[in-house]
Image (cartoon, rainbow, N blue to C red; front, side, top):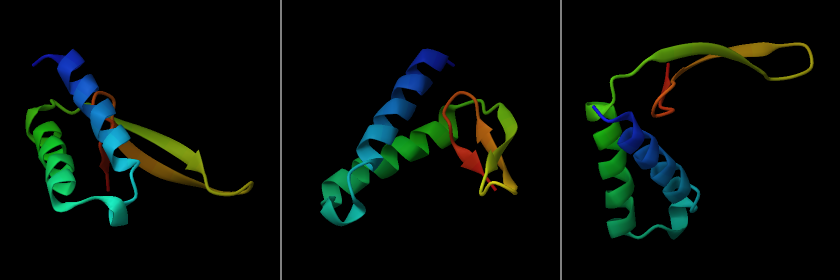
Amino acid sequence: MDYHSIELMSKALSYLESVPYSLQDPEYKSIVISIAKYLILNCKHEVIEDHIDTSSESSMKILYCKHCMQTFH
């Protein structure tokens, strides 16, 4: 697998998802879904555990792939 192509697809998905969902036509939504599926199927995920601050006194654990930035629950 080429991690460079995974990184580029991840960036493209991030840009495409920045358009509000209500402004996306069906073809646009289909492209977003296709890229997300590509990343799920083709990235050899390396999950990283991190914590983000939710307030000045608490944090939340997050899991994400270091290559495609996909988040996991």
